[in-house]
Image (cartoon, rainbow, N blue to C red; front, side, top):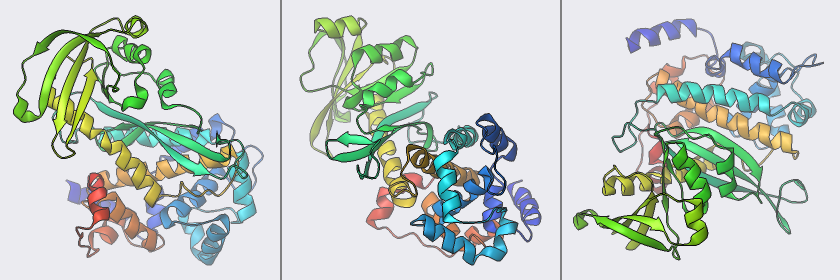
Length: 400
């Protein structure tokens, strides 16, 4: 069945560049809905929102350093741009104005459309633990900025930064929620902007340990797994039997001892103490799930590391550390288009049944964008052997 679909796609893509084939996976109807929602093409004559998206997508896929870099490379390919879908005149001033003025929410909404598609494709994927629940990892990553160029992104007295707050679906490592704030916003405040899915499990580090907000998750019939702080005080009600050979030292049902904490979270909690032989350390987990075996709870928290790998991966392989504009709108536009490209490549990987990692696919695409070859043929015919170096070990998550 897959072979027949691929053959049909090859026939359809006859004579089309790889870049054009990639953009065919972007739902045009949904894109135009996003543009109309925010009047993106209002009074635009030659350089549409679609042209802007294509230019920025090209920059992400080929790792362009600046607006001048984008302009020079695209003008060098001028005879191929029309067939790639680019109709507007390519000039760095035009692209800079578009990034400055056109609402970043156009591309934020497009990313959400692609995320919905990707989650549906990866819904049955395994992330290492067999569970019927949807499992999310929540974390934030800081991107440093020059305060003199980005005065709106104040972080410290003489330092600028933004934070990328991300909720990652562990099945497929798909970012389901991304919130961009300035560096001063604490991670725990993002919980106030979230809607929690019943029966889902949310993995968070100690930075999100706020009992009033955790109780909100509990009232939504969702579950959380987080770590306790060193000064955590509690009252033990009773202990469950444990197998210490699994690393679990104790499994207790507790209530909070501190008056204000107990007021914020009046219900029972589960406290699990675990010894990690790899790190030679003791970890204490808190959860409101009383049915999962204690070793599974510990393994779940370890899966939270996938969101750290996600941040590391997109910082290394997409353009979100250096920006083509200095305004808040330009920065958010670039980040959302980068996320859209990441999810788009994940969709292509799944729909074409590609075995290569996202990293490998992006590397191949970066040097073949304007070749007139079917994507599947270009990637599958690449004689590529993965070496067991440190970078590959760190990015093993993305061998989906």
